[in-house]
Image (spheres, rainbow, N blue to C red):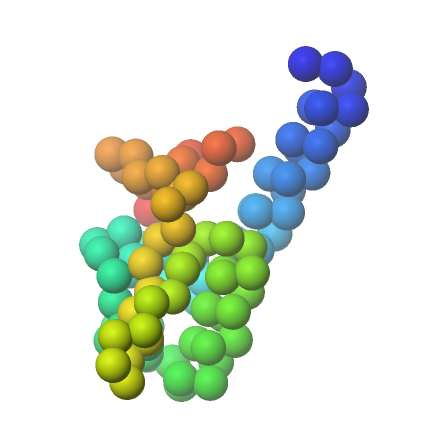
Length: 99
């Protein structure tokens, strides 16, 4: 791996970790490890207002950590396919995040 490739990989990893440097976003990922959840279920589980949750979900979506799927009037979120499940956490392709 040349210096430029290593630098890009480190920057990508740092960007991912920066997104996750928030307890609410970590809570969302932890909740979604158990499977897809509706926005309503996430607000109850995380005990936060829907507007604040929507803000964090948008950041996680933009960073490709989660994907949204509409089912009727509800929106369900699940972990993005590229976030590989490991036995004890999530594989971010630069490190493994354990809860």
